[in-house]
Length: 216
View 1: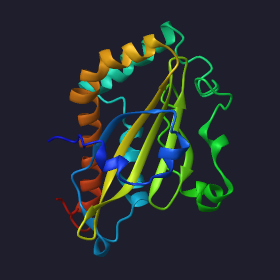
View 2: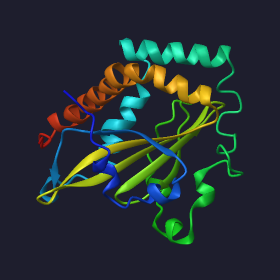
View 3: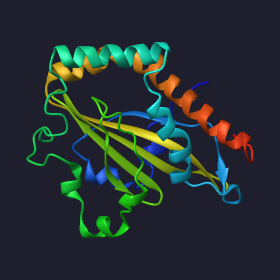
View 4: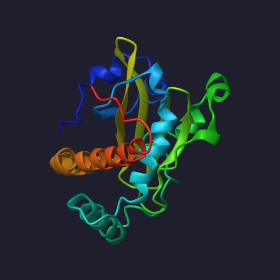
């Protein structure tokens, strides 16, 4: 199953991240295979709490992807990539967090009490930037890059919605960009497919207790 999505599935909508992080690169775009309608009683936050959060809590499983995450943890410790985690300035900026760029209108829409917890309490310590009704943004900053994970409740036509993920990156050096290009095959063919399948397992396990998830 292919979870990749065209960049246009993200860029054709005026998500807040696009102006908030206009100095970042849109690195990857992905989508779950489900299509939801209003009658399904599902929203972005229910999907995040039921599928994405539990996947992150089990990220170090016995799979190949889980092994790669553990290898990355060791490499990060050896090369001190994760020292001073989430305390680096955004590359080329003085702000340390995109939260510093939020405006009053953003704060009025923000519902931090609903924020998804996708931190592993180690080098994947993603922190929420904002939690809106139809989109959420998390960030992580280490010595090589500042990364963003944007989840959206994205219209897919005919009164239906999909959950879509966009990954933004801002590199600290040309070496960081080279590193990301080198690991791209692992991200695209091992890591993200595994993550999405694990999310689907959690979602469908929840759905087995009630209604089956609609699938496009």
